[in-house]
Length: 288
Ligand code: SAM
Image 1 (cartoon, rainbow, N blue to C red):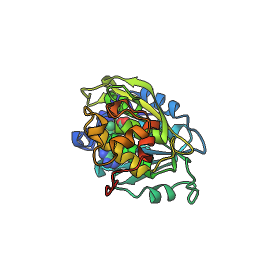
Image 2: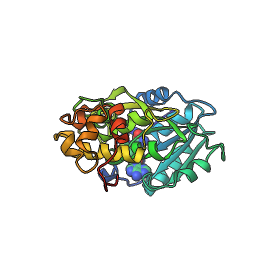
Image 3: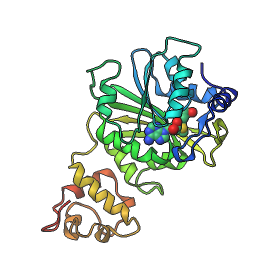
Image 4: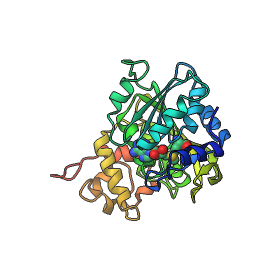
């Protein structure tokens, strides 16, 4: 079971809650959409799911219905109360744990470690399934890829433009640091589009679903600190040629020695070329 538009309206009204734009509160009020997301996640009994931003619980209910154990991390205290009420409602026996915390700040080890399965925090054992708050969706996906190897797969709903940035490749307009970060750690792909009509309140933008499956090891063998310092510098001045945007980090001669054309721009380089640049010596005295 999950929540209809009428039920979400009733819950918000009864609890005197006005959706906060600052927290990206657009609630899904279309049962087929949340069922589709749960299906795409491919989770079921015995699986451990972490949801960021459960809101009033539309997606949480659909995830719990699969039989998976769900840990839901919500920042808004008022919604935590509503969520607890919804989870205790009809259709008991759900395995849902509610954590009141800011997903950008929380200590993920302790959230996941304290969850079902306890000490078994093995890499890749958790699936993140979420309709992410739009204002933090990119840093959240990138930080979780960097820092939380326990999350092996993500199925996330984000703004369409964000989805395009996460899965873009060299030469695409949307290609940037988040695309390189996803490609480094994982394989990302667009798995669906979602119209504004399924949300309350209705956003002004289209949304999309992205699947991100973590690789067993990163796609290239380069020092990630150096690699992403270069990627950041390159995309920081994406219209400039690499010999300018990477000045101070890699000499022009070293760019050539790495097999990269110094007149190219960041948006043209694939991950293997970024890795080759990361292996190149920096100018004398430079730090990465
Ligand atoms: N999952 C619900 C749904 O699909 O109807 C709500 C999704 S709504 C787009 C985003 C949710 O994320 C809101 O409940 C909001 O309060 C919560 N949120 C925003 N920033 C957060 C953060 N930093 N940590 C945890 N939750 C956050």
